[in-house]
Image (cartoon, one colour):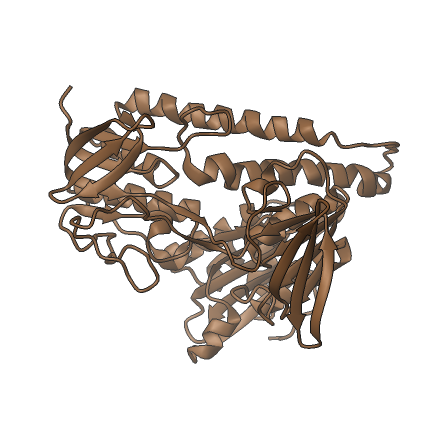
Length: 478
C-alpha cells in the first residue's frame, strides 16, 4: 500500500481521531498515527481524554456520587440503606471496561470510514513527511498533502513534589488507587484537582486542596465561584487558598507536605498526594528541527484563527495550540480543519465554547464572566435564579446553586451564562445556542420550557434579567 496520503493526522485523541474521521468522510485518503499504549500493553486510540482523562474520571465521579447518595441522601427519600460499602477495585474495573468499549469503538469507526491507522510515534519532518517509529524501533515514512498535528498535552510536574510511585501521583495515577486513602492531599485547586478530590472525598478521604492563588477558581464568574467553594467546604474538602507547596518528603509510605501561606510555613502529612497544577502542550519528538513549525513563547504550536501553522498545509489543533484545553474544543477544531482541507468553509466560534467542572453540583459556563465585562467596560445587566426556587430541584433533593445570565444593557444580547447546580453541564447548551445565534435574554424569556424541569431555571433567569421572574421577588415593576 502506498504511504502517500491526502491527510495524515498525528495523534488520535478527541481532536485527532475526529479530524481523521471527518477527513475520510469528505473523500480524503487519510491516515492517523498514534503511539498510546494502555496499562495492559495494548495499542489504543482515544488519547488522554478516553484513556486517562475525561471518561475515566467521570466514571469514578459517578460511582462515588452514587455511593455518597446511598450513605447520605437516601434516607431523605425514605430509602433505608444500611451497611453500604464501596468495592474500590470493582469501581476501577468498571472504569477500565468503559475505556475499553470506547477506545475499541474508535477502532471500529476508523475501519468503517477507511482511516489507515499507524502504530508508533509520529514526527513531522521537512516537506510534510511524517516519520513513524514503531515500538520495536523500526521506522517508515508517510507523505501527505496536508498534516494535522493533534499531539495533545501532558500533566505539568513541579520540583517541590516529584512523582513517587504510588504515593505522589499525577492525575493519571489518581485514577488507579486500589483503596481509599485516609488522608489525601491535592496540589492545585483547578478543574482536575477539584474533580479528583471530590471522588475520593465522597469515598471517605480527608481531602486538603492546596491552591497557590488567593482567588478560588479565578477563571469562573466569582459569584458562582463563591457558592462552589461554600458547597465543597460543606462536603468536607479543606481548601487552602494562597498556599504554595514548597517541598515534600516521603517516609514510611506517607507524604509530608511543606507549604507556605499568609501565616507562614506549615507541614501536613498524607497517605497519598495528587499533583494537579495544570497541563502543557506535548511536542516532544513531534517536530523535527527542520519541520518549519513555530512555537510560541509558552511552548504551544503557533497557529492562526484557522489552525494553520507557519508551514503551508500543516495544521495544529487541540491542547497543543492556544485556547482552553478541552476535548470538545479539539473536536470542533478537528472537524473545521478537515473541512478547510477539503475546500469547504469552516470556522470555530471560540466565544461559544462551554466549560464544565464535574463536581457535585456541577459548574458550567459559556461566554463572558461578570468580571470580564467589568474589566472591558461593557454595559451589562444580570438575571439570577436560585435552584432553591425550582420545583424539580426540590423533588430531586438538590437545591444548591443558581443560574446566572449576563446580557448587554443596551441590546439585551446574551453575553454569558453561568450555572452551578445539578446537571449544569447538560443545561449550559441553552447558553451555547443563545451565543451562537446572538439571542437576546428576551428570546430565552419568550421560550416555553417544559415543567417540571431543571431547565425552567434558565427561563426564570432570563426573565430576571429585566426583573420579571415569576417564581421569585422581582427587582423591577412595570
